[in-house]
Image (cartoon, rainbow, N blue to C red; front, side, top):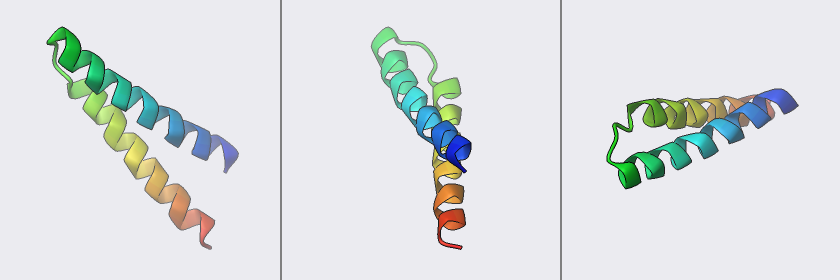
Length: 52
C-alpha cells in the first residue's frame, strides 16, 4: 500500500510539473496530462482501498 501511495503522489507531482513545463516552453502537454490523470486514478484507488 505504501508503494501504491508513493507512486500515486509522484505521478501527480510529475504531471503537474510537466504541464507547467509544457506551457512554459510551448510544447505538447499530452504526456504530462496522461501522467497527471494516472496519478488521479491511483489516488482514487488508494482512497477506496484505504476505506476497506
